[in-house]
Length: 150
Image 1 (cartoon, rainbow, N blue to C red):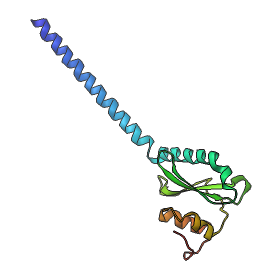
Image 2: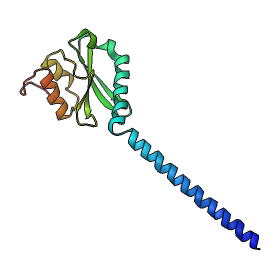
Image 3: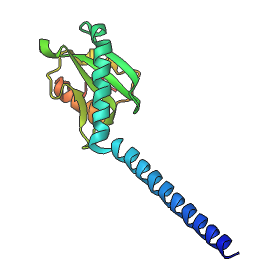
Image 4: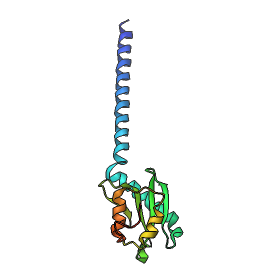
C-alpha cells in the first residue's frame, strides 16, 4: 500500500511539471508572436511584403498610379507612384498604416516622386489614406493644401 501512494505522488509531480512546461512554452510562443509582429521586426515583414508586391506589379505601372489592396499579413493598401529616377521607376507608399516609429512607409525610402496632383487625387478617390500619408504625398509632390485630394 505504501508503494501505491509513492506512485500517485510521482504521477502528480510529473503532471505538475508537464503542465508548468506547457504554460511556459505557450507563454514563450505568445511572446514571440507579439514580438515578431510588432515594432521593428513587424516593419521588416511589411517591407518584405512591399518588395514582393513590387516584383509582381512593377511592370503594370507604365507611368501611371496603381493601387494594391490587402498586401501582406497586415493587409496594407499600397499606392504605386512613378519615380523620378530610372533606378526608382516605381515608388510604393503604404496608405493605411504607419511604421513602428510613426513614419510614412515608402519603398524606396525618400525617393523623389513624379506625377501631378490631379492624377494623385484620381488614384486616391476610392481609398482612405491616413492623414499623415496624405500630408507627406502633398509635400513630396508639391501639391497645395487646396489641391483636390482625399
